[in-house]
Length: 566
Image (cartoon, rainbow, N blue to C red; front, side, top):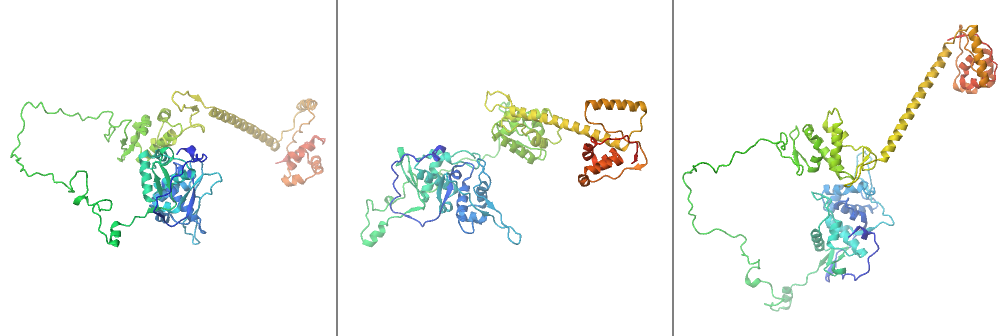
């Protein structure tokens, strides 16, 4: 069953398969649940997830909702507690494909503060979402693998999609073991179909479907064939003699046992013979003498460079390697991991087994990602190992520095260079990383300029404060004439007048400063009166520059020589 066939319109009408065999009696009815088709065909969900979903959806229809514990669900489904937990884990977490959570949950706490089982419910289906209806009794009676096969056949039967055993095997996957993630074969799919038909939930019509395919008929209740009355009972009721030959005669195999393929009826044959064993044990051992040319040559047991350190295990790049760190515990490294760690193999002896397993897991995860390759990881480790001066802990360095990919969100980006994902591709500079570097450089320059301007403003502020705290003494006449000339020239250039010279130091103290609110409430007339009474610098000290400077341009300043003590 291809992925395109799932969302396609119903297939062309054809002759429907015949019904179940006559004489079959359905069992009592039960509840059915609508299950999203993505949960049935998604390879990211294990087989146990479908059984757990159906049971939780059925319990969630109750007024109190689904509050059953994991142990209770395992008891009702006939599964182990760990199997239910493995099936429930991907349902309560966001899906890696589209981020959907099929079974949201809400934690609960009793009034006493102790925790209790969580309340679980299923995600409502979208209007245009594909679904398949599964009986709740099927989830309790069938194994998870057979229930998934039943759901696939139920959807194909409802949409009238002809399927083959090979297509069914392509929709079922191995979830554990060495073949995890691979599809089932055609022979395994045929065996599962036969097992499902033996349970009564499926009827297989051999070669009665479209183009000679098998036609499948799923049932909402298991069917059991009612056996006909025994011939012996009928004969006993009628009082007639049983037939010795023909269809009604009992199968007695001519008075002997059944035919076992021309074999004997004995369950265990005796291969012994009645001839006496004439072999006698000699009393002594004779040693062969001669030139000893038949003796094998001595074996050279010296270690070669191909044999690893203290454990003496021959390591190659094509077979799993058993590595023994200084702790003595053996850690098995797969060939891809061993090839990636080629630049730092001489450093692995000092890594703890736990850290070494984490390194192997991280390498395996990166190899399974898009753009991950052994050459890319090995080159990354070699370059960073060659450019690092001091490494205190090789395990932490591998996990935190060497195996970490540097670059943008593009999987092919490796430290600003796009690695070709296909053989024969060209290495190119990553434009995103180039723009990011330019933005970072511009930001650094802007921060440096702002810091420089802040330092200049702080220096100017410090100079103004020093001028207010320590006014300059009275200057001589020539200096005053020069200052007056400079002031006239400045007045011709700009309309604004310069601040007057600070008054000479004296014994009078400065009045206290006003607060910000008092300065805001002060009127312009009060500030002008302070300028006329105490002078410009005292007014600046009392009311601040923001309120005083705009009024100084309209006020005639006189030559003030009164000084104030600090």
